[in-house]
Length: 210
Image 1 (cartoon, rainbow, N blue to C red):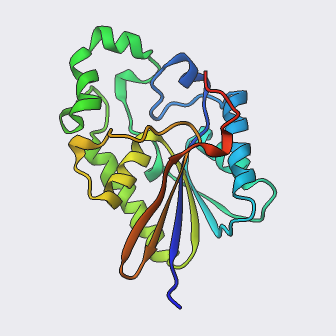
Image 2: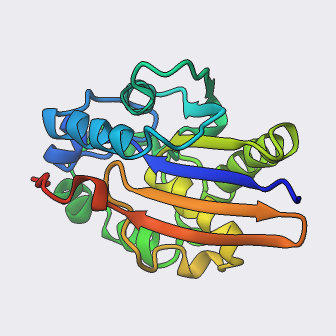
């Protein structure tokens, strides 16, 4: 019988800066109580799913999310800088409304024309895609036939799913929206792959985002 690789791809839970609408990037802020509950609920949903290994961005918010999903299961967590959020340079720590006021052109490019996005000190979307896909290929090669949980960030989740969908960069932000602690699943076999779940939040349907 063919061995298939199952990827669970998860965004971190809600953070304090998410609530404040601040850009985080490589900066960090703690999970909120809601964010912790989102991750806990996802862990409860996946408790009977066989997960062989967890890969997490090296940011604290993703590591914490990964630990809450893992619960008390004996599953190793491997941290990777390649799975970190896009570095946003001088935008990091600033509120969205400030950026919309001070740099509206780049704000528009960020969501409507990612390939032209360029901010002082920031990565390009292509650079993030290159490092994220590099890590993905390592995971797919070294853990073929296993179930792997990847805990990362919005831009990386979008780029990984776009890779599997063969979706061009200009359509990166098409729906579904990547909510905190949402779950996507990709099944990979020798003849191809299938996205069986994308941006799902049913595990915390009775939680409420602020």
